[in-house]
Image (cartoon, rainbow, N blue to C red; front, side):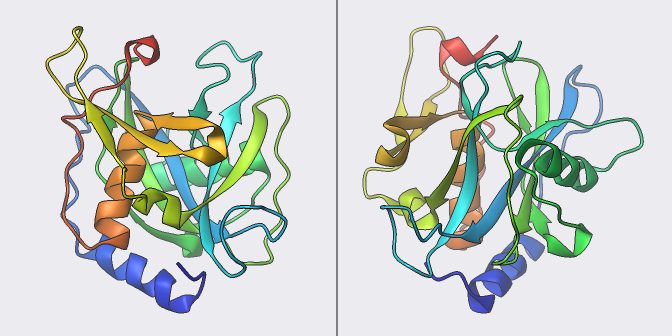
Length: 215
């Protein structure tokens, strides 16, 4: 998928017409936001083609107290007085050094409740081609630029059952991370694919996470 204005406006338009399902009251969950950030592919990356669009994915630093070493989208807790969009942009700058503003926000997707006690608001952000990134080593062990085409792999998503839950678990295979992207990140990216890239109104709240991600 080409990183160009046509893609940008396609994503913006599809998010604008998507009927968001948000849950902000009465669930006892801590509010959080993540940035699904569309960027140009790194020209030095072996995956994808020059001019491809990609998204940013981090591997969390191993010394973090929560979810150390896991693959995640840039994001974190929503501070008092912040909107999800403001929190996602702040966390994007704090984690990967990418400084953007509200004009770069294309839209949002459904809030997703996690087993670890968070209600995540996914915010879709467009990064200018020349924007620089500088990952914070205290928070990010590795920063990936995953081509959007990886979300369209024929075998993706993988949906399966586990004995600990009556809900199906979702994960996205990609060799770029030597394995899989697991939920909750997989659920958010799958909805991004369905809504923003394919134009299909798809819900993902019913998808569960692997047991090791419940903590």
